[in-house]
Image (cartoon, rainbow, N blue to C red):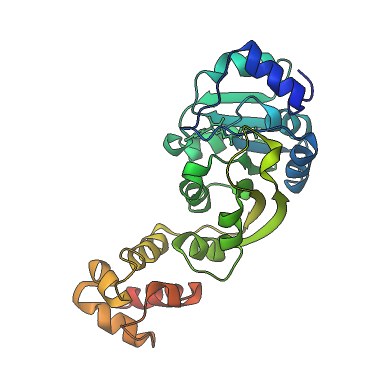
Amino acid sequence: MENIAKKSNTEFILNTFNLKPSKKYGQNFLVDPGIIQSIADHASLDKETAVIEIGPGIGALTEQLSNKAGKVLCFEIDERLKEVLSFSLEGHDNVEIIFQDFMKADLEEACNKLKDYKDICVVTNLPYYITSKIITKIVSSSTPINRLVAMVQKEVALKLCSEEKSPLKMMIDYVGDVQYELNVPRHVFMPAPHVDSAVISIHKERVISQELIDLIEASYTAKRKTLYNNLKSLYHDQTKEVLESCGIPANKRAEELNIDDYIRILERSHTL
Ligand code: SAM
């Protein structure tokens, strides 16, 4: 089918397949071809690029990604969509859909399938219930994925693009940067969610080590605790020494540190 995102086409698909959008899986389908086009444009696709899409739904965004990219590899959790997608994306031979929870997917293996392409990016209209976990999985992976264009809840987009610190924000600061691209009002979805959305893009220039991820995550274990208390699980009786030798007072809290502080702590811990 052409132009799946047209409201009348989406309604036709939902009616024909008697498909009730699942709340559990965060199914809010985009019904605005202009917004879809704009998301695909932000990904700067060409036929030498491969895309990983998380949650194709009924295929509205997938259709445009397939037109622009060399290959689209999708992960969809909802098996009810098998029949729908083979109808809506008929003829799009460069689309492959794996019916699996993306959180259980082996990203290395997925990227291996796409190794003949010049670059690999992720483009997705994310299910909101699992946004942070999915972005963390991509940002912390050591795969060749070099950018992510994602529709997220507007509040999440604003936080990620602000100075507010969080483990995910620290990881993004290390691997590259994040940009706020586009406001998306709630009425361009079917059904309309209770919140507005926004498109962000994350550019990944380097890989983060598991050791640095562990340090950042340990620092945020208990939000109310000091860095000293949170880091005892990693550095035991040497915690105070590590922090002092970096000039970081032991009573500081994780959100008072920036990524350079974490890199310093890690380097000092290696010299113990
Ligand atoms: N891409 C479509 C669009 O833009 O209209 C649908 C987006 S909808 C907000 C989110 C999609 O993600 C749904 O198709 C849902 O079934 C799927 N999904 C939810 N959780 C998932 C998971 N853990 N892994 C893979 N897909 C998931």
